[in-house]
Length: 152
Image 1 (cartoon, one colour):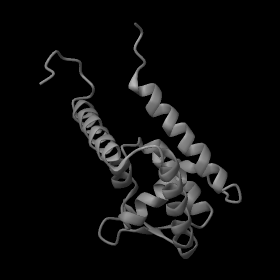
Image 2 (spheres, rainbow, N blue to C red):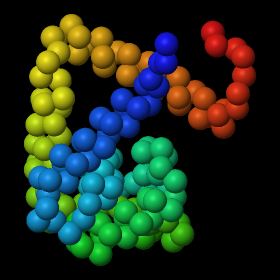
Image 3 (cartoon, rainbow, N blue to C red):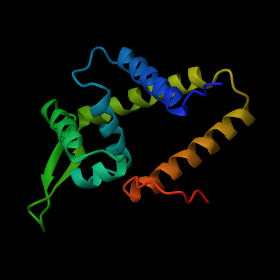
Image 4 (cartoon, rainbow, N blue to C red):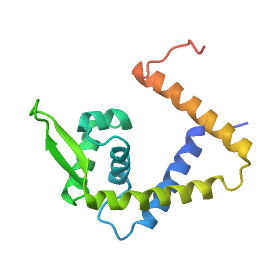
C-alpha cells in the first residue's frame, strides 16, 4: 500500500490558501508573499529585516524582496536605527495599516471554509497535531536538518 506524504496535503492547503487570498486582493499591487510580511509586522512593528526573517523562518533574500515591494508601494517605511546606523526598523504606514483588517478577514474566511467540515474536537486535535509537527520541524531545522536515528 502506497502512503501519501503529509507534505502533499500541507502543500495543497498552502497553495489553496494563497490562491484564495490572492483572489480577494486582485486590486492590490502586492502579492501574498509581501502581505504575509506585512501581517508579521502588524504583530511586531519595529523589527529589522533580519528579525523579520527569523520570525517567519524565511531567508534574507526573500525578506529583502518582500520588504522592498512593501516600501516601494507605500505599505511600510524604513527608519534607520539611531544607535546603530547599519540597521533599519520597519514600520507600517497608514496605507498598510488600512489593509490589515482586510487581510485578517480574508484569512478568517479561508479558515472557515477549510474547517467547515470539522467538529470543534476535530479542529482542536488538528491544531494540536499541526503544532506538534511544526515543533518537530523547528527542532530539526535548528540542527540543520541533520539526519539521525534518535526519534525520541
